[in-house]
Length: 328
Image: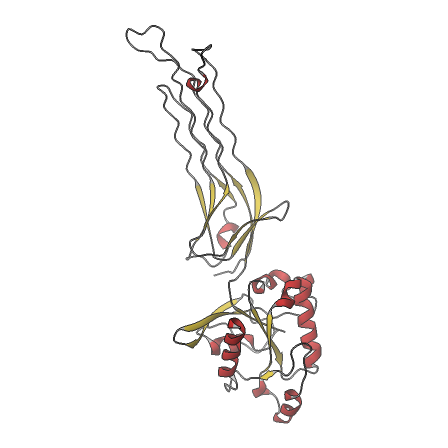
């Protein structure tokens, strides 16, 4: 299934039904009083988290969502029926933004969360509501209030505790497949991962956390180069970042600096997240490199953890480092 994490849709709440103007017509009552009922309320537009969705692909095929209008009031003081709400089901982690102002309207971060985004218009009053001491037979009634409408942008952001970041082919997919039960596509060429992958890592029977494997970044990703910023949003919610630097790199510190800069330029909040720096794919490097790697000093972090997803080197240690960073 295609992974789609952005969409633009039009939403409109229902109009309120108009009030009714009528008078009682009863046998033996020649001058019956007003009995026009009020109009019904227009339906709301509601966003609801669905556990069965993990992409916004459905919104490629349907882009307009309108709630039902309220019905007009009737005689005998009968209020019109309220319009039906329109419920828009979205994946967990979806952000709803006003398309014009980019203001966040709703952030769907909780299971079974339900948020009313547009309220329906209220129904108009019937003529029975306008009776006064000096006007016992009013004929006036009100139209219903119109509903509200707007275009909104939907952005899906994965909900993960730990985000794996690195250049293409740095070993992120292999690592998440070893740490968890996730089965991402793995191959020895750049941009194998074209969609974010989630995996649950179990430290013990009652301790686990979620890791996100983000498609590889390149220099200029924060400005849209390569796979661009379309995937950077998925690590905004993570609390810990794990940097993977390929053991076969020609400049480890430069690679780290580029990755750090791209994250910071995308969002300054990235600097506040806890970090773990790993030298990955040690199985593919010559062993003579190990002393040099062990003495690397990454700015603001220090010596890296040397790992290999293929041989299993330092996998348990990395799990516990992630857990400790999350619970510190």
